Image (cartoon, rainbow over all chains, first blue to last red; front, side, top):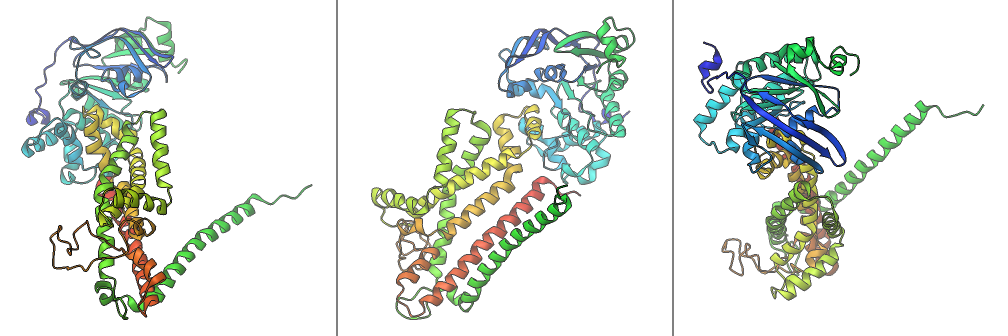
Length: 266
Length: 300
């Protein structure tokens, strides 16, 4: 029995091919600039879905439509539909609840300037958990699941800014799973990290997909090939091709995908 | 061929000049503080600090004035700190760019550049005449609040703005509301900056004279320091009594003091005032660093 089960905060249910995210004719404009064009994809649950493509192709923008972080940007207009569990998240829903269900890990580790414990407990506290025993349990469980527990258990009260970048990023992942989301969005989560920390995070993702659906934006082609189950290739705001990672990388049907993957342009 | 000054030499001259300027500032401050401490040295004792001023004989102290100054800063802080921080939050997080925000900002900036004597006269008209309070500590505190508010609003706004956007996003992405994000992440992170602003503003209020001449008045009733009933006329805690502060007292005793040791008292009081303002500034630095370590994180 591994630590995840021992800790017992989530019972991994691996469902096969249940679509959790579905978009229809999703268009997004920043002012006059169109950043996303007619995106229609279906992302399966309990899989790692990678979004690849050159800089400025809209993959991060797409990622942020899934938890409505784009709401924060003035001038950002969205048409079309985004369904999560068959509910239109741009319809009449509570954004706060959406963001609890759709967590996000950012490019640069962004721990709060408070203790390691408080970082992980932040989400549950925000959503009303007050009991110390419950919080203790959530914190330990989340840290165990991100393989951070043994490294930080003796200094939970120390500042989160004092641990290494790789540890900080795993802490941010722990912070995200502490609110028990369904989907975790990752925006180039390893681009600021060294190879070893990157590897740890990749292992972690493989572990986490048992319980969560992961959508990851990555610039690193090898990373997409290594960890993801499905890959979507974005180019100038469009999804050129979407499918199982092995097929996208080995037999892309589109010439543009092949060019990008073989490094003919970046 | 024209000879040019070599860049290395220009660099050295620039470095030397800047060091000189910085040094001049330090020298000025040291000379200033040193002079006042030296001339006021004979009065820097407990008797001077805690006894009442005398009317016509030598040997009076500054007890009530010192108390009034501290109490006034406290009262004004009670009003200006919450409003100032609220204004800072508004400007940093809620104000949308546009005419209204520009106008509000302009208003605050104008407020902060008002000459204190003008604020004093305004306070006289409003807090003394209009309210019918006559000269009161409260009137003085309100007038000083007008001076403090823009400073606290400004420093709070800057401190909140300087919290990295990524931290704010992290909180929102966890499903925290905007208000929760402000209260639980932004304000704690901005606290060192906010506290610095409050203390600097308090230091200025402590040394303020012109505003208080017309609002808190130039006299202090006989205070009974054993009477802590805030509505009693002789209680030091009563905010609706005239209250001459230290800075005002310095001005008064210098211009119309009747006691034979007026000069000595003015020197002593000035030394106390300077030391207090210095202490305010040091406290600001200390607290800011302490809070920075508490929330910014020690590296252990």
